[in-house]
Image (cartoon, rainbow, N blue to C red; front, side, top):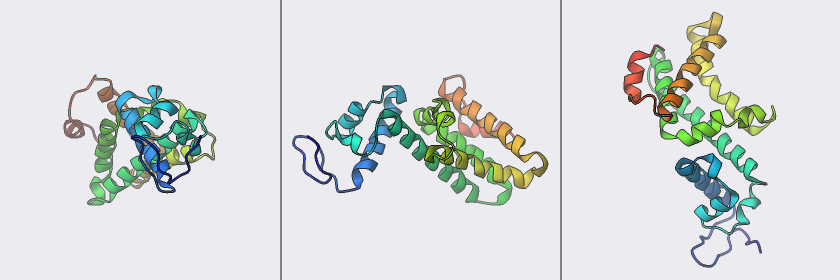
Length: 191
């Protein structure tokens, strides 16, 4: 039996107001992914972590893939916000370096979410007009804009190379091949 949004549940389950359950579920999914990776996330584990009935996640997500698409979309939106905030915090000359540092920090602090976003195959398999594809494309735009301002004749290629450097560093750190701090890495890469 499904509980209506905002209804009180028995036991340790929480009470949610209309509209808050989706956020609670996304927060719980991010926490589950951070703790155990995306492979271990199921609708049942999500319901347990969120403290809701097993049927509750299906009110907002049709299945596990829909949930993962939503988590990844939210991740790209948060990632883009971090890059834009870094770019706006200080003078234009060092904006690209600040964005590079923000990129590395986001990847280091959100390893499993980053893997879901960039290494799970979700984005390449998403429809071109999907929120996930749009959010992923939008996350590249701040880097492209800054590189274009500095290096217009080869901006797209240059932005991809810089993105590749940052992605490689995040993944090498995540997999334990690099142990240096973001500050140390920023001291030796050129942006």
